Amino acid sequence: MASQNPWMQKPARGEPQPSDDGLVVDSATLAVADRVVLRELSLHVPLGETHVIFGPNGAGKTTLLAGLMGMPHVKIVWGDIRWRGASLLGFDITERVRRGLAMAFQRPPAVSGITLRRLTELILSNNGNGNAGAPPPPEEVQQRIFTLAERLDVLDLLDRDVNAGFSGGETKRSEIFQVALQNPQLVLLDEPESGVDVVNMDRIGRMIRSLLQRDERPGNRTVTGLIITHSGYILNYVNADCGHVLADGRIICSGNARDVFEHIHEHGFEACAQCPPCQVAERLRRRRES
Ligand SMILES: Nc1ncnc2c1ncn2[C@@H]1O[C@H](COP(=O)(O)OP(=O)(O)O)[C@@H](O)[C@H]1O
Ligand SMILES: [Mg+2]
Image (cartoon, rainbow, N blue to C red; front, side):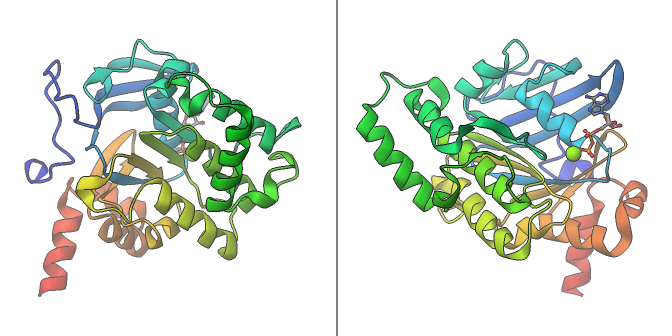
């Protein structure tokens, strides 16, 4: 039943949230170009957890992340979005980035005329998300670029124009590197595996695992994650805390991410639509135990 699943519980409208409550989407209705795409959607990602969203094409997954990030083409026509207890609705993208949000796009654009190194310099000179005091001295910026690029495996991309002529895997590595530079607290990843070959998938999977601190003990994790995945490959690298199915403009099921993915793999999204909310994980658990 819905009430047995903590991730499906709808926070009461207007109820004050504790400041460390993570991400709360509270009955949000999101519209794009005057068309409602998501209707009264509720979702809770507690601080330090990583949740995964599955859903068919056109379900509104990208719209959800764009709405969280504050992209102007998405209008929140009802409901609320809160991060760490504060509503984000009055804040533009810049302010949301300052508050720790960062997003890796499904299809980021190529930017000719600026190298990834130059972009990295600009981000680091601005202290990642523009939040902390004075910018570091230039020599420290260069040292940090090297250290971060080496750790995140993008040294080979630094002196190329951002995403220009990059392969699918290179684009995603560059994108996740840029997200990491922003010192994010809430990481939104839109299909990080799409267009990525097996070898790059391994590198990207390890980058995301590190970014989301999945090797830390749960109580020590300070980064919260929301990942949209179509293929589910990312689950091989990120032991997500919860999986949700987004279809018909709302979350129709939530449970153990792997169980939900296996169920979709076996029966398709159509079966999810007919399954009462929150029953999938429970049924799979009983089946395993029997
Ligand atoms: N900028 C836009 N203008 C008009 N319609 C859009 C725009 N972005 C998304 N949509 C529509 O919103 C719906 C959800 O799209 P999207 O969020 O991209 O789905 P998903 O990421 O789940 O595949 C689709 O019907 C899509 O055509
Ligand atoms: Mg999408």
